[in-house]
Length: 312
Ligand code: B12
Image (cartoon, rainbow, N blue to C red; front, side):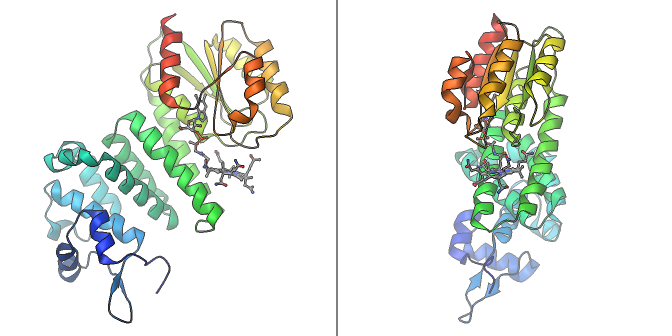
């Protein structure tokens, strides 16, 4: 037995929304998954099995017959569910908005399964399908952020390698970058410069903030991580930015951050708003306040602040 095969059929039935009878029937007739057997002949399933079974359930509920889809690769299954819009539209799924949470959990489990197998393409298509299935706030805040946090936890616990995290970060970064740059922007909308300050290498929070602003119509200039104050100031001046968004995650005791924030504040026009977010930003609360910047960690507040600023 491997430690990946750890779920009994009862758990799998609860997590996938299938009956135990259906799971056994699909296995026997269509070989949809191959559980391991214990010495006492109990079936044991992996996380990847749960994701696949859930996906098959969603596809059958969307009108596809199990006989036709049982052996399709994950990517094609997702395409059938995602591109036909059936995840959002099928009455069966709509009923289950009950369980938007369950559905989000399913996507996160599918993503983790893809990451574990280094399947960048499967991760990308799962995220793509999720971005179509959920509203942008749900996608960013309930799926992307918890997914990255889960990856961090598993990495810390040793169940994922650094290489897994790198693969996930690369896919998420590209996807969010594309969403951020592809958003509709009207010429009259103000500019927001987003970056992480010098020494801060974690950028997904900054990308989430940028994507959130872009979806509200802001012209977002995303500069990436680890940027010296002078560069942020230069970009904001050239773009006549109305606001700057910075993300601070780690480390939380960098003595240079205070100076970087002071430099930025001094280098930009007084009416340019400075927002600072990220899991580590609380550690710099006093300097954030002293520079007149606003510390924000949740996206609803960020949206409200951006809206107020735009309306000015
Ligand atoms: C990906 C990742 C990396 C990547 C980053 C690559 C990249 N291009 O971004 C790399 C490999 C570089 C990395 C390196 C390290 N990492 Co790292 N990393 C992560 C991981 C898995 C995801 C980070 C992430 O994207 N988080 C998700 C974002 C979405 O969450 P968030 O930042 O809190 O953002 C939310 C809000 O705060 C808000 N927000 C964020 N920014 C902003 C900005 C604005 C303007 C607004 C309004 C809101 C806002 O929006 C988000 C959604 O709600 C986290 C796990 C985790 N829990 O975050 C670990 C984590 C942050 N890393 C950690 C560690 C320890 C490290 C290393 C020290 C590991 C090592 N030994 O080398 C190095 C440090 C490197 C350095 N010098 O900084 C720890 C930090 C622990 C701590 N706080 O003390 C974490 C928490 C992992 C863990 N569980 O231990 N890491």
